[in-house]
Image (cartoon, rainbow, N blue to C red; front, side, top):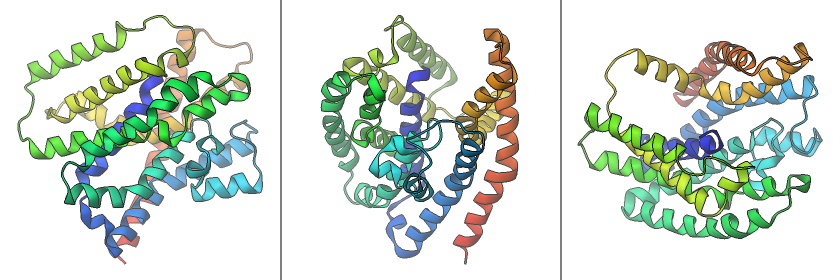
Length: 307
């Protein structure tokens, strides 16, 4: 499940944007406001993470050269090479920003021709086949070449449009799952994730070829199941909303927490102790960064949109 967290994130991202935005995002003011909001949602915390990596001397990306700093400052590294990110896991943020750049045109096309998302998904899925079956499997592990091949935009672009398909279906179909149906489908998804490829030597064994498409489809199904169920007010919904709010901070901060624990406790911690302590620290720090950095910056973006 952890190996496919990023793929699930891309599908969720596609769902959210195609569900919330229409073709008007391509207009002059709409386009400006869209990019203002996206920048102030992503950039402030990302810049903080880059600065923290630099201050603490953590190795990420090809080095803190002027070119790499410029690519990260402008988020153009996703177009050039996602692994030019200067934070651990930042390649997916670069990929997300590529989607932001393309989204206004995609939204316009989807609004004017209903089959666009289905046709586009199939086209981008076909584009990913050489990467999944040839380029990534044949790349060497030396110098992280296999990972460099894996993170390319062509290998992931179809996932955003898959999310768009879920959004299109939810807008068109007003029916919703009952609680019993939802729980039954969740059980089926858990079995689908856990009963196939249970034992493997390296993550890439399940991240290329047919296993990749199998698990991407399961991620797609998971997003669809949750999209068609209206959660009643409960502690589960409250907890889910909290995790959604702090998820960006969790993603960027958890490598820093891990490094901090490794330096603070050179002898290491037991697996369960390390896990729960790291989880508590990550969630605590993420709640703080969301409250005092992300939320105020999102508010600033909204205020600028009104000017």
